Image 1 (cartoon, one colour):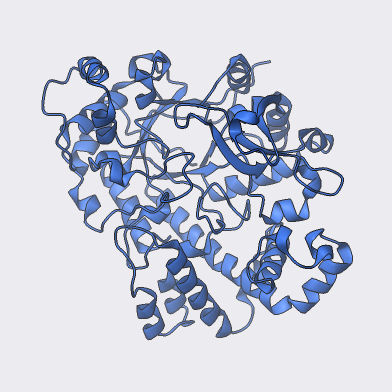
Image 2 (cartoon, rainbow, N blue to C red; image 1 turned 120 degrees about the vertical axis):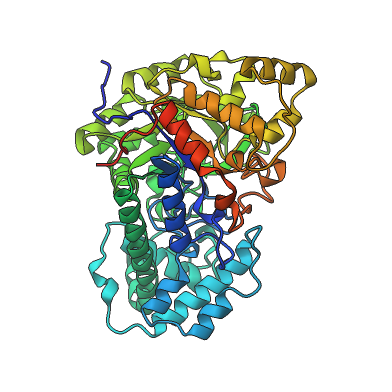
Length: 506
């Protein structure tokens, strides 16, 4: 069976820019005025897609791939100006929210502290319960989880001193709902605010022909509302302890592999109820995004299972994943699936077969084309692929050129047909523009460029270095960055290579 999805990807282009990376006065990008300005830039420059990283509520490590909820929005991304417009905070409080904030990097600890303080002040002045009409299926469980977590000084659920609450005992949960009702209401208010702002941004983008591509991590954090309340859906022993965690074997990014620490799924149990949890998750994501990039797609064919307590990802082994029955169940329940399969990493025959059978579009990354895999070189792309100069895990184009061996760089420059000055950075960086033009010329239906490559930035602007726990996800662009980009060049590029088609969203 070859499942042909109804979702179409017209020939178009987009920009990868994580929301937190946006400029603005609050120490982190927010889903307000600056996000709408970026949408305006995309429209002027002829793009039709904005790809972001996960915007779900992250844990203390601030990685968007370690969310404490698979559904709730990140409170740090709420625009404080909306709270002011609602009359819930004073001008002085709004001004204080910006004090001490860096324009160049994200101080998550300071931003988180100030944002929660402001949100609590706003909630204390709320009249009535305007949030009561917002009732997504996941909200009650998430709000309870957060209320208990706050009660125990933000400790991870497996460190809560109350054993009954740790184990999600029904009576303990009922009692907590009564005792913490005010705190539960606060977290519902916060998610209502996030939802209102997100809906406004998405509507604004749709009105300008811009689709939002969201990124869905395959796993959820070990300290998450879902793992706490639905332990049986994960690979645990009879006492609820994790038996195995996720990661990847040694690869291009890390010689020791990557030990993510996320609990892996109990796929056999999930299959028994027709993958309802996944249906709910994809349905919620389809309500938030126009297109979903399904992270670590290869894990649905087979996943790297690492014994709990292992000190290295090298101790793992490949285990068969859910395969096509999962996607058949999703399509049967949800219809058209607007999914991009992130089929990167160590890819075997099983992954290629699953990609073909599912009918999803896979990914190509230009930088990988000079590592011996010619399928990542632009001349190999087909209209069924989604192509990138680099992902959030890659360094920038300019840094990549500097990091190449002289032999590889000469080969790359010959491939590109470039004989100019390649080492000069900045928004008019000749080598970055040349690579981006080559990507646009390819047959890939959708091409995506990280904003750092459009700005000609070096290695210090990298979003993430896989396998390194510190210093990631903190880079921000300056307020004048978008004005530095030659929007006319990209508008002409989109027109020249017929990438100015209608947007993906209906």
